[in-house]
Length: 344
Image 1 (cartoon, one colour):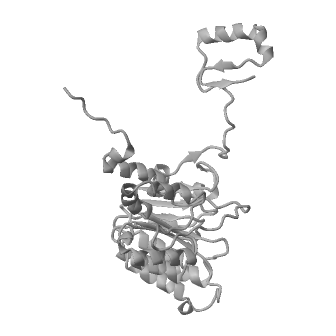
Image 2 (spheres, rainbow, N blue to C red):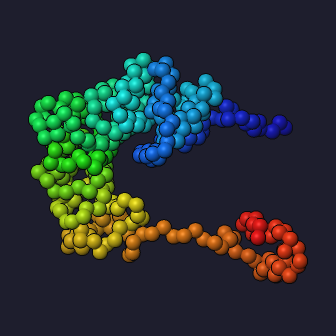
Image 3 (cartoon, helix red, strand yellow):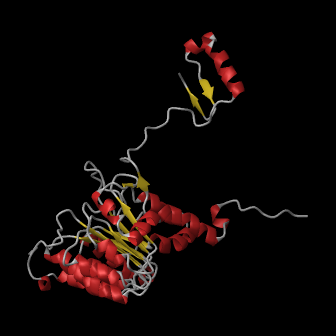
């Protein structure tokens, strides 16, 4: 009886399995780590006829090389590769747009777009990709006239018009350090997002990736989110002081959790001014308990353990004790310990 043939190479694996493997290798994180200041590598960008995408935080070679292994890998991996687009600048958006125009089929694969700035080019990418479900927006400053009339800001208008056409499930809002909510562009973006929320019937999660405060622009957005019919998750940086924005959103009967966090630490202290006030509101406090990691002290990373990963058995302890009594130890003889090999 002939035995079943065992696959001898990746190319002989089922394509469903290959897609899972490639997804782990070519899908970028939602937020790319910032390059160190000494990094001088120039941005690699192929021509529109090739796979066009901004360079990741490490090397473009890693994800691209997998797609160049074979035609099968290229066919399976290309839609996965384009599921998330990171567009940190208008230049990146313009180059990706060239690729989408040259190969319209790629636009159908895009599900998430991370915008590092507000630009007309970024808006055009959103318009070209009709199946986007997840948008990450970074609010910046309208440099031509930060406090001028919003009607002059064509980039922001184009972006908001493009957002109106989408059916979003996930929304992330960030801001650069000097994009204060009193400036024209951030106010305009929040006002337009507020108007768009009622049309996003499938909106499931919202992430405020900054410490949001209560302002004339943020309060209407909180009220709109309190009526979003499918909103299940709210994530946000822990505010410095109490405001009622999250309390307003918590009145949404479909909301299941509120995940608060502080940058650079694991969990939050429940003795902060905000958390002490939040405890007075039972429903909001319960939602925070469900979604938020808690800590009782400042979360400082624990020092690495100096103990072996696998404890020594009683018999091994006797062997080590015997080895310590031998003269070979003074001659830098390797001493093997369960779980690793060390030279003393």
